[in-house]
Image (cartoon, rainbow, N blue to C red; front, side):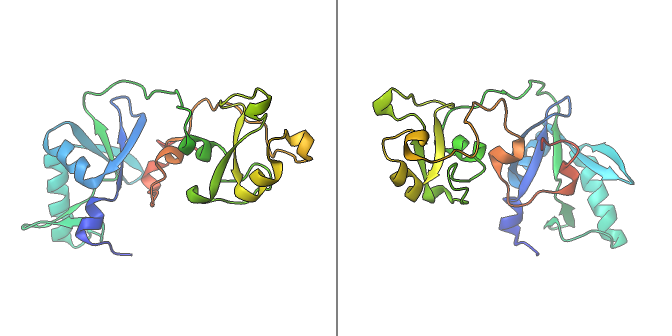
Length: 202
């Protein structure tokens, strides 16, 4: 599928810190801004080896590939020649390790429970999801990682203000606080590029 220029500038780019650890996913537009400011360099694979390129070197490589007729469709067209969109960049100064703390939120519960009702296993969209207190608040249950699960509306209605045992319902897995989500679970990009694989959590 060939994307329009606007869509290409909004397509995902993986960002590594100075120690080659994946820290976030940003748009190609933002990646180009970072490269122009010398805040990052391009990481690309050539004959199985990872190579580092300054933005100037990346432009030279794009021009060479264009003149040689070997550039692909993953480019942004400029006045002079198409520029290859980098799919991995490395920050030149940022060396902090990503925060491993996972905030308790509706979205992160959805990620932890793999978009499934924890009673019937049905796959849910975000709008189809309700949150269920395993031990109801009326019985002293708290709003926490180990007592809240994703549920479809029918299962939540069936369980009501009862515990799973009282409602004769079984949880797929016991809820607990996740230690850290893989980067892709948190950002859920529409495209995962093969060059990302050595750097991302799974």
